[in-house]
Length: 546
Image 1 (tube, rainbow, N blue to C red):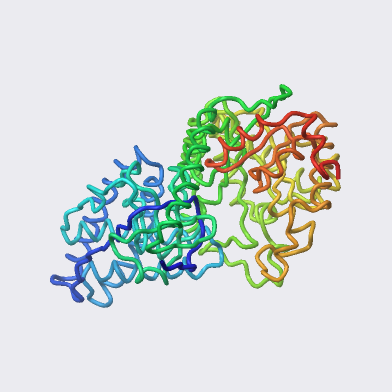
Image 2 (image 1 turned 90 degrees about the vertical axis):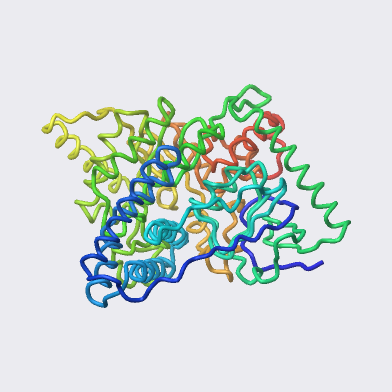
């Protein structure tokens, strides 16, 4: 028995048999066989076919809509054309090098979400390359036995689209992060996953007995009988609990005392909106709009591109609420086409609403797209990192300006659209009563709020332990915000990681929280947790009143 501890934990626990995916990629001819014009034409023909394929796939899976946008991005095509015309490369080699350069740019960024998009770019390039080389697309996952654990260098959306998840117990990849597509799919499908396990790859062979612990990142190769029995029992127990929770996933969450609590979903793309709703979410409490900006490598996404994404999300939600947060960039989130310059402390610098208010055209484009999409559902707009009433008023004024423009153009929008504030700074907490008098709703972002209240960088291992959302200072900040909202008669929800923590559910209910917004896999377990509580039980929770 060997225990490997080099992976990043992502989801679940599983015991099964390894299937190591081996990719065969034909070598690219270095030089073009014809003149550069003919080679460029070959590339564009393959690109056009890839777009056609992605258009068909996008109708079934929203991730391929994002891939279609990547294929439409002129930056990739320009880099391929340059290598063909200036260096005489074949279309295949030019594509390989261009893809490597784009992926390298993304991988070098500090932002985890952007780094996770390298696999998507590689998947798009791989599709174009397969067409160029006339390779037949085969399903390497056909015929897998139940209980298989797939081990691969990477797993792309094109790979997961071929998988029969009823036969797959878990996945292990050498590359990836907790925000990568394979992790999102694993959580949505309820299977175990470990990513970033590059040092383990050579130690695992097809047919090996494996245990993967998505809680710790451990991979156990050839476990002894006792260990395998213990993990299989644990996995089965979790599966039973998960199945029990899923039975009530689409039933309202009501405490034993009769209090109705709303459980919404968090989403970072249109695909995640669908996943959250399918998981039982009663709407979307946080839609992170920055995914559109991160996928647009050639510059800021246009109004129509944004409108289509927001419209699609609104149509999926129907009458259920869809809270879209305006661009939240800066801090640990960067854009490859935007220069933030050097900042001594980016988390206290130019980020979120500060960027939007200082980049009028970028903000205007987003607000117009949001307003136009508002007629297709119950869409609300939320502003991040607000620290004062003045900031909220400036953001609100920008919305009114866009409304006036749309009126002049006779374009439809919802004139009663609700504008809200994300409470994630101590300053916002201190003026929550003033903000509540003007905003229509609050959403508490506990991830940033905790770090700012505790004055500790959650990404710094020396002080990360101080970022405790259960600390009295954080709990009081949450309670003050909820009290201000209650006094003003506006809604207040929570969309940070704390909302999904079962240890926090009791005291959050006692503090008056009526709306939780969590990731898709957390929806059903949270609803079940809420159903076990009543107010007398909550009041006895130690420290709940702190």
